[in-house]
Image 1 (cartoon, one colour):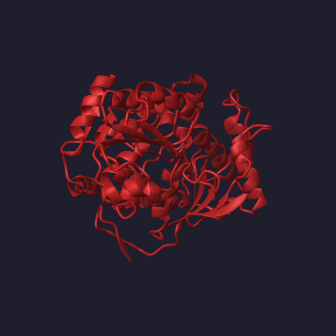
Image 2 (tube, helix red, strand yellow):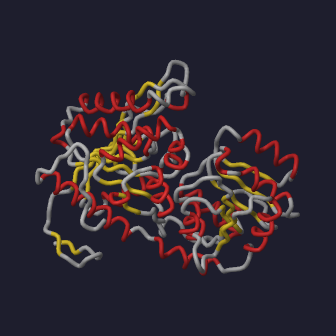
Image 3 (cartoon, one colour):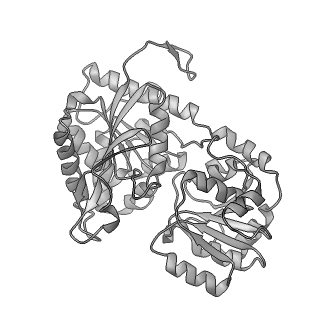
Length: 416
C-alpha cells in the first residue's frame, strides 16, 4: 500500500503507469546537459516505481546541417533510461511550420521500428509545447491514447507569440487531458493564450540537495584554477540573447577588482568575450558547459550568481546556486519571483541598467553564511511535486482505461 501525503488516502498496489515520453529536450552523449531538467524530473518520477517511461528524443536532420547532432547515437542508455534518438527532417532557419509534422512522422516510425504498439503505453507524455507537444498530439491521436503536455518557458513566452504556432499549440492543448506548467506565472501566460486553465497544473521543478551542496570557496576555486582573491560573480546558461549576459558583463565592469565567470556555450560567445575584453579586460572568463558535479564547484567558487534573463520559465540555476550556499540576483521574469520570494537570499530586479545590477550584485556579496542560504533552498525539494505528478498520471490513465476517450478532452482530474 502507498499513502499519498496530499490526502492521506491509501492507494492499492497497481502496475506502473507506462509513459511514452516524447521530447526534443533530453540529454545525449554529445550534449549531456541538453534538456537535463526534463531528465531530472522524469528520473525522480520513475524512481517512485509508480511510473515507467520509454523515452523518444528526436534530433533534427538536414543534409550538411546540424553537425553537432551527427554524433548522437540512434539509441543509448542515459540517466537510467533507454533513449531512442530518431532523426526528423528540419530545414534550418525556415522549417518551424513543418516541424510538428516531420517530428510526428519520425516518432511514429521509431515506434514501428521497435515494434511498440498503443498497447505498450498508457499515456503520451510530451515536454516542451512546440514542436514537441503539437507533434505528440498527432501521435496520441494515431495511438488512441491520452496526452499530457508540459510547458517549460520559451515555448509559451516566445513561440506562443507566433500566430501560426499559437494556433497549433491551442489545438494540442485542447486535445490534451492535462497541461503542466513549471510556474504559476507560466500557467497564467498559458491561460492568456487561450489554453484551458481548468486542466493546467502548476508543478514546479525541484533541486537535488544531495548533488548541490556547499563546498569551501578556496577549495572550489583551486579546483577550477581560479585566483582565490577578490569577489567572483557567476553566470550560468546558454550564450544567447535571451539570457542577457551582456548586461551582466557591463554590471561587473562597474565593480573594480570583481571578476565574472560565465559557464555555458552558444552563438554569442565570441561577441560576449569581445565585450568583456573591452569593458572589463582580464576580468571575464568563459568555461564550457559542465556536468552537475562541476556546476556545484562553480557555484561554490562564486560570491553571487547573476541571472539577467529576458525570459524564463522556472530557472533551476537559482535553486542550484542557493542549495550550494550562494545568493542570487535575477531579473523579474517568469517564475523568478516564485523562487526568490520573501526572505530569500537574493534580489529580483526589474531595472535592466548596469548600475542597478552592479549595486545589487555588490549588496549580495558576503551578506550570509552558505548554510543560511542553503536553508532557504530546502523548501524546494522534489518529493511533493513528484507525488502530485504521479497521482496526475494515474488518474488520467485510470479514467482513460474506464472508457472515456473523447478526442477533444473536457475532463479534469479531481485534484485540479
